[in-house]
Each structure stands twice: as C-alpha cells, then as structure tokens.
Amino acid sequence: MKTLLITRPIADAVIAQARDLFDVTVLETGAMDEAAAGQALQDYDAILPTLGDAFTANAFAAAGENPRCKMLGNFGVGYNHIDVAAAKQAGVQVSNTPDVLTDATADIAMTLLLATARRAGEGERFVRSGQWGGFSPKGQLGTHVTGKTVGIIGMGRIGQAIARRCHFGFGMQVVFFNRSAKSVDFPATQMPTLNDTMSAADFVVVATPGGAATTHLIDAAAIGAMKPSGIFVNISRGEVVDEPALIAALQAGLIAGAGLDVYENEPHVPDDLKALEQCVLLPHLGSATFETRQAMGQMALDNIIAWSKGDVPPQLV
Image 1: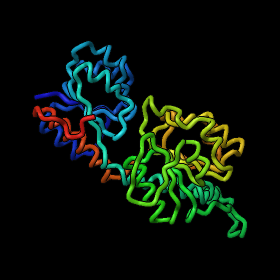
Image 2 (image 1 turned 180 degrees about the vertical axis):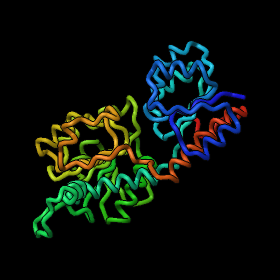
Image 3 (image 1 turned 120 degrees about the vertical axis):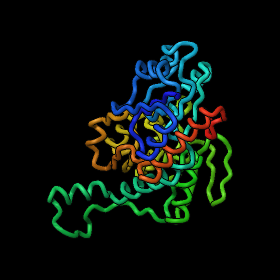
C-alpha cells in the first residue's frame, strides 16, 4: 500500500476514504518548512499539501535527484508554495483544486468590499466596546457601493465571479486589468495598464494568482494611482501586495480603506496594519465554507488516486 502524507487535517470523510486506499499520516503541526518538506519528499509516496508548506527548490534539492514522493496533490487553487519546475525536474507531478472555491472566494471578496465601504468592522467593535450611544445622522458614515466602479486585477475564474456579483448585484461599472487579452460575457472594460485600472476604480479587488510573476504587482505606484476615496481589497495572495507600501498609504490617508483576507507573511499580520481602524482584516477565509473545503479535499485526493492508478491527474498543473 502506498504511503500518503496529509499535511493538515481536512474533511473527515476525505481522510476516511484516503485511509481505505493508502497508508495515511495526517500532521497537525502547521505549515511545513523547507527541511520538513524535503524530508517528507523522501519518506512518502504521495503528499497532500496546502498553503504554507514550503516545497521549494531547496526542499527538492534536499530530497535528492529521485525522491520517493512522485505526487503532490495540492489542497488549494494557488500553488505558489510549490516550485513546480523543481518538482518536474525531480519527476514529481503536481495538481491543484481549481473551480471548487471560485464562488466562496468571490463571496468573501464581496464581504470585504461591503464591510470596508460601510465601516462594518469599526461599527462592530464600537457596539462591543459599549461606546455606541444610539443613532446619529452623521455617525460612522461609509461609502455607497451601488452604481460605483470596481476595478478587478486579474480576470480569471475568481475575478470574473467577483465582477459578475458587482455588476449584476450592485449595478457597478466594471473595469479590469489582465496580463493577456480577456473577453467576458458581461459588460466590462479591459484597461491598458494596471495603474489605469487603479485610478479609474472606486473599489479595487485583487484576484491574481500568486508567484514570482505577481510578487509586489501592487506596489507604491499602483496604490498611489488610486483615488483618495478608493477602497482596496485583496483576496489573492499576500505577496502580490507591497504590504509596507499599503500600510503607508493608509496611514497617510492616500486611500480610504482596505479589506484584506491574505497577508504577505502569513500568519503574521503587522501591528501597524491591525491598528488601522479603516481596515477589515480576515484570517484567510476565502474558501472557508464546509462545502468548499470538503470539495477541495475530495478533488486533491481524487488527483492522488488517479496518479496511484497510473492515470493522468485531472487537475495536473
């Protein structure tokens, strides 16, 4: 029986199915560093990793030219924590879990957009603190959402799902930036540059993949292109945003607020960011629904099962 390492506890039903097919080890120790990842590549036939597990080039180098592990069935659509080129060179296949988390992640983007615009985080803290003294005509005024312009950075599956919610649900005008030409089946305008999109939008939502190509894509210049009344939302990957530049812009009042589900050095969230009242901060909840996490686990396992049978994993990257 092949050995399978599951690096974080996932849905019980998925683990039960895995145990019927593999000799399964489930870790409960948090994200794997490079040393642990390199050792795991030597110790197991297949691994089901997720965000934060450092399957870097160094980890593959530590595992040697022909590691025991031949399959990484990643739990997550993003796989920037896996060096796919190094995996391929080592003869290790890599899969991911696209599609199943699109709606859940788009929903969390809308949660952040609305909560930041309407100052829901501040309001909730205000009530809990006992400071609220009742309705005031000028109390905690926020920003209207309906009819405004949203700028989507990255018009893939998730970006399109967010754009549809904004357009059809809130009558918003949609502009977007994408590294390649993109046609969509709803009203939306592709802008020529990133900064053009940032400057045209009342709300900016980042939905790009992570990885070297997009690291600090949202830098000080891009943030500086936003309107002073603009609100920034990131549900992609933390490293896509130059976090110190975002904090500086918020502290200086260059933009009105931010809603974040991801951070540059998770799980660390800078104290300067936590101190900003105009921010809504969530603990990476993008795919966090029972249904979505169950489906993600099942898809990751299905890819590993396909590999174990000698078939091509359906979501091979």
